[in-house]
Length: 193
Image (cartoon, rainbow, N blue to C red; front, side, top):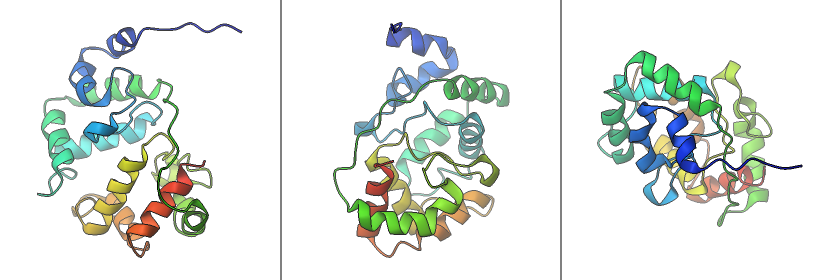
């Protein structure tokens, strides 16, 4: 079997001019950039990507004073039209995700218990997500991004806006994790899937 290798610049170009602003943080293949705290976009469903960009644009996400990453996305998404968001997210959802790295911290066995009792009902047993429950895949994200999001949900930095129904649900669920170690353990388990 042979594979066609497509240069990264062509992938970024194929996403259209609206993605050119995104490349600096999310990468030329939408693979994310852990050093910048930017999540992977490749491998996420268009419905989820669209919902998040609209939430940033409307201010239901990224408005908390302690959410510096969200504030950046809020500013960038403000310039996108609804049509641009739809086109961009559909293109991004067609990209294959990069291979995620395993976790460097946490106890995956302890995390498995938390994940199966608290997270799997919405995100599925294999963390692939469930559109019917508005739950995204967790498989493509870096360990540091998942930890930061769970911490932000627990601290009310994310999911506290009255208009963010799904964020509020996730904030409530994140609070079922008793401490930072439990967060690391859950993420370690997710990274085994």
